[in-house]
Length: 472
Image (tube, rainbow, N blue to C red; front, top):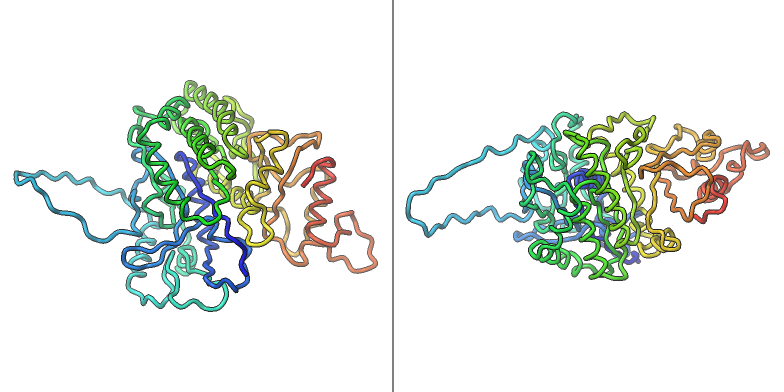
């Protein structure tokens, strides 16, 4: 039988968090699968940990993220706040006013080629037979035996054999969003503007005061109840929160609400910060520093684990150079690029509590890493893992010598003394015989790693050499 699904509710608070979250959900869409047969063999990662199933007014089955996302006025561009998945196609046109009317129409934002192709694929979906595999979230009416791989937007775009260069056309995160969102997902804070110099959410106190308003609290609680009450085994919440602007204060209030209302559930908070900001100034740098300090203290206090995620070399006013990834073509000054790297890291960091079999629940992972009340953790990543074609894991790790293959992703360098309180290590994309050495019998292993019998043993040996007193 399939393992029990332990659902997770995701919250994204802030514009850069939504950049990271958009890449994150695009990655989930690439591997989205639906398993209606309880006797089918389980998949490695369970999509229903993050996704929910629903039905539109027309009877169409949908599969949408279990997500609450907050942003500021003017941040959606061409994306509709209520989404397009559950629309009825009818708009109310009745008026009681019989006098003269004046209509003002705003020119809709221009969509890039990527969004135009998505619209075309959506229109094509409406013309195909319901028994065919639809686009994005359609589920076949008569599933075949075993796990049914759903045709996602990624697959459809791959069939079109087009390459998109969106660096010059992405202004906001919705410019590259591939998935459909539920109408209860998006919350727009109209008191503050996304662009311009006035009415900006720049200070921790602004966000804290905003979260204490009755209107926002009531709206947030309604959305939380909607997603939480349909869960059978809710294991917790993962919160993506901008760390260096007013969303830091808003996120502190949100995590406090989650802590008070859903005690015993895991709350994993990721404080996100880009490498740079538009229109920098010394005063804004001071705001960013203060927001970061207050955010780390308050967010970690109300979370099971708190992990800063950024490519910046530090969170101070004059940080060291950003983390470098020699195998990536990366312009870390672009939010579109830097958020993609953090989304890949997030996708790997969260694997333990999304596994179908042999996973680690959020509460257990939090207890293992939060030793003696230390709830602030650091993330490191090798993106991509430096392993050549035809090589094996012992060869790749041995070639590193005394260095480590991963780079810091939490604005703090690797400790040189090897003293770490706890670790969670995830390796993806390497399987089969590539996990161990392929030396013929009788040859002397060039390193202790080549003498290991499994990939787990290889990793434990390598980690143990660098962190001899750290449990993994």
